[in-house]
Amino acid sequence: MAKRYKATINPALLTWARTTASYDLAEAAAKIDVGEDRLAAWEAGEDQPSIAQLRKLAGLYKRPLAVLYLPEPPVDFHAMHDFRRLPDMGPRRFSPGLALEVRRAQQRRELAIELYEDNAAAPPAFALTTTLDADPEQVGTQVREALGIRADQQSRWGNQIAAFKEWRTRIEETGVLVFQASRIESEEASGFAFWAETFPLIVVNRKDVYPRRTFSLLHELAHLMLRQSGVSEANVDAARPAADARVEIFCNRVAAAALMPRDLFLNQLLVEQRPGVQEWPDEAINALALTFNTSREGVVRRLLTFGRVSQAFYNLKRTQYAAEFQAQRQREREARGDDGIPRNMPRETIADMGRPFIRAVIENYHQDRITLSEVSGYLGVKVRHVPGIESQVGLG
Image 1 (spheres, rainbow, N blue to C red):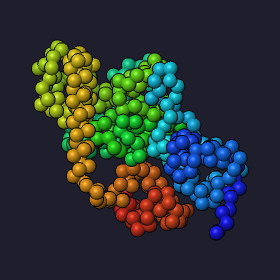
Image 2: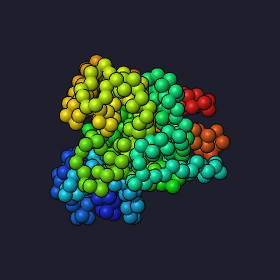
Image 3: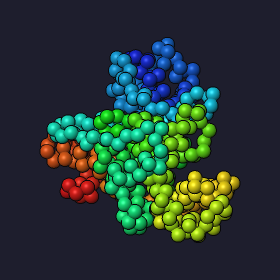
Image 4: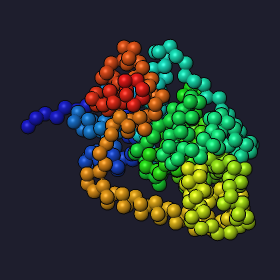
């Protein structure tokens, strides 16, 4: 029988790796098929895992094996504030998928800073700012002016995908890194923001439909303008402590005002023709959503803000739209079957990581500061996909 070699490590690394990956003891033990007591003993230093077991833990926690051999746990990023707390319940633990997306976004940001420094270039400075005492309608106007968004341009974008890409590009030009995450369930979070003087970042949930992603972009931008980091709930009406609720309501109103400016919205013929609180037909709501390339729920919420529909009507439509969204997702899963959708890795990589980050990686490669293998690692793709990515960002 082959001898099983024990891994000589600092047990504190095991606890650090598990908690930063957002697993509790029972979950982690079940994932690697050991008893909870045994994993607890490893973390307490009463026993040690075999090297094979340590490899399993490294894979589960998405950490390089070498990291678990460090003498002390690294100092991780812990600045994220969880806006999803319920009153008197304390902070809510992130899912492993969300914890991983937060960590990877932070690592990409640090890499982007290094790449710019290696290239002797200064990242663009993010100058937009506001306070919670500001009028959200005026802040929305400020956002549009800073991003150079005009009503005639917005109406010509044509569809919700084009609108999302345009808002994203304009926000990236202000010095913000914008990523998309695919490991977060829509029910858990719509996105998150990390504030920093250099390269603040926004991450939106790729599993959301495009109108919700666009709203999330602007919601998280408002967080950055407040100089705040946080994970945001997709449910705008979720219960929160008063201080958190004030921030989230403010950011929601700024996002709505940027997407659908008050005067522009109220001057729409469809809105002018329906003064007062009343119920709206789906055709009219759909037409306004297409005009502003936003969601139907966003339109109804805006009507509620201006007293053009009742709270009961908003609640009714919100329930309807949620049910329709879930039904559509189910139909899409059934249509895909087991094969799924063929992946276009260059397009997918650009969508997830954004052009500014990818251009920084490719430009350093072209200047022989990093290798092709490093490009592959930084972008998370095989080497054969790199030329396609180069071509799509205009550096091929």
